[in-house]
Length: 211
Image 1 (cartoon, rainbow, N blue to C red):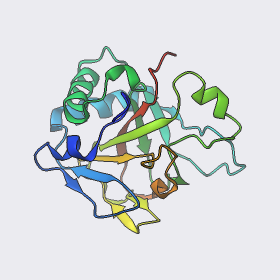
Image 2: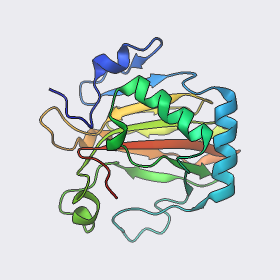
Image 3: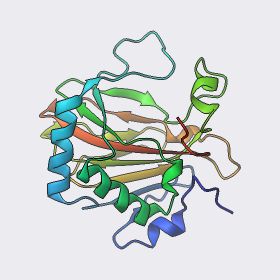
């Protein structure tokens, strides 16, 4: 039985055009044209207007580990509401279990080195990030634009690179069937070589967000 902060392969594959990557170690899905062009353009405007340097939950001493910029998006914005409505219809996850939508901007040379989206049990900020809403369950990421060169998302364990494409959604389950975090979700936001990359990220939790 699914928890309220979870989706499933059956739910996602019920939407037309969804593709599941053939990996036993990782539940990974794609859908092209998830967001229309006008919504992508508006979200890019919002990210540009409010971006700040990105951070990581547990510092690792590498100041170049995550060099992108991040934007917390206003839930009252019509484009954000449109995005949220599309996600609910797609993944059937109760919105109360979702984190606020974030946007990221990657200029030339910027990246997010190989990492997982779940919080490492026993990590420095484990209690801080999981005490209220629990562990991250699913990640839904949407590319907002084409990138001239670079900027792919690389899943190293399964040797899969997904290239940016405006409006394309990429989704994966951060958990194993037994409820433990899945280390095979390790992924790398690769360096942009030419142009700028914009993405939207939506994470879901085991419990209501509550912050």
